[in-house]
Image 1 (cartoon, rainbow, N blue to C red):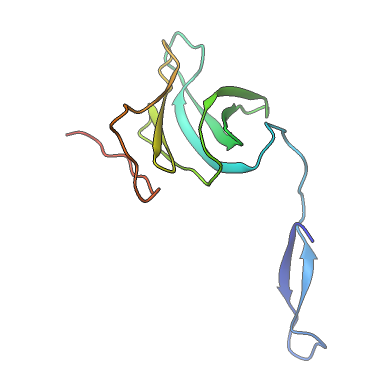
Image 2: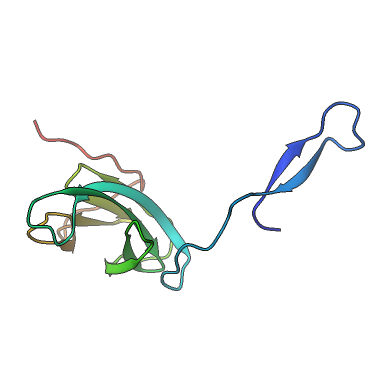
Length: 136
């Protein structure tokens, strides 16, 4: 059973609850072979803009690939995120950090240069939970 949620039956019913179908679900996009390992929305520089305008993109790690999802649900593969377990993501408005096991990845959304790189070879991510630290 997929896309169901429990609905409590008022007092006096034969059962305590029943499974209601989730309304309004529809396929919006397909990306990669899956599974979806993480999702993040990122208000960042618009890709391809020369003015530095900002836009909301969604990002997903499907299998070992990071995808950008635009407002029309079009997906673009950006880079590779090794592993098969859940990833955690955070951002500072210009860069998005992805923790994947003991590996870290940085996506730079600068409108003049889009870059996706692993962190340096001596960086180890532990615990898998991420918080972006803003330098003072």
